[in-house]
Image 1 (spheres, rainbow, N blue to C red):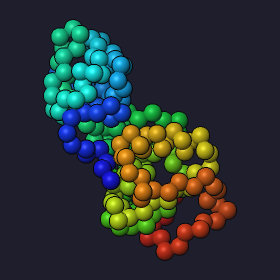
Image 2 (cartoon, rainbow, N blue to C red):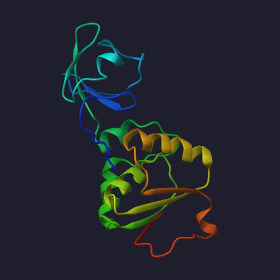
Image 3 (cartoon, rainbow, N blue to C red):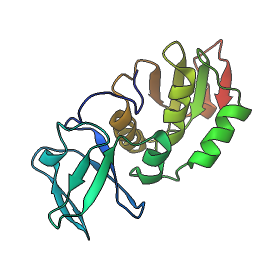
Length: 178
């Protein structure tokens, strides 16, 4: 599983973080034929697809932006959401205080925007497991779109459309995050 750490040139479907000289940060999903617009000019996505991370990209007005892959914190702050997002400063505390460790089997109540799920997946690693109970399929679909924006392999994640209060099927869990 790669979580926000792919290597090589940018590819279509990836999220890119563009940073200007004043430190302003912009994220966009790379789509062939699309354009990113800003007050500093526009950039065709084709100008970003295929270039290496850390490259300077010129806008139509000649302004330069640095292109990076967003960190998990960058992505969480900018991710599309329909539910309340858990912010990076809180994600760290949850991971530490809940003592989420590599290889842990974790149950999560509700997907929300997917931010906590992403942090949990990173913390449990490839040898761990996260199962999430979500009441609404529409919420799960939007959260999974966010999750899949940063990770391509979701083998360590199981999403169940069910009410946690009606009981769980899992046993031998290491942690439960409510």
